[in-house]
Length: 241
Image 1 (cartoon, rainbow, N blue to C red):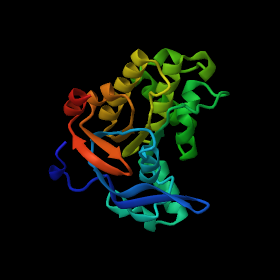
Image 2: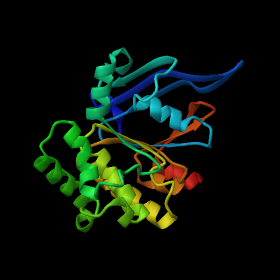
Image 3: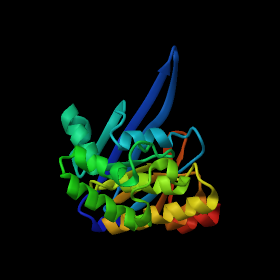
């Protein structure tokens, strides 16, 4: 997507630095990262293990505070917000998908997806209706009453994606969302997530080791030694692999 046509990015990182200290040692994980994510854009983040992908996603998702730089959501400096404002921003503007689904085993698929809606004050009826619609979009209309233990790994991850989209977040942050699945299931789940994001109008920042999946993305960023080394279109990333 051409960002020049957008009023402003939905997510903007500028000069983001993140370091960790262990005794006398300092590990520089992010070294002044700049990144803009535009409305409706699906952007991939690739790079070797230890390059800082997860840390970057945690900073982008307001789960970690950087040591320097700014993080803006819809033009608002998230680092200047108080704890309550940041919590509300995470709840209303951001959705998260991880490698492991983290579903609540005692709840069925519908109730897992409905949980963030209920927390946000929606009625049980409205939350269940929205959850059922999302699960149908994910191809799980016949699994709404199944508990996680009755679902396959791919189905569980689809439930997790539906849950992440429950509150209609502006931004979906996904950290290796298919990393725990076999190749065929991985592709199917990612394609479903892609379709869901397009339907809901969400912008997506997704870290993955699976270069094949980048063919579905609008843009691919390569993170090396704590900084973004290259930008490319998805087709270029796939061809270069």
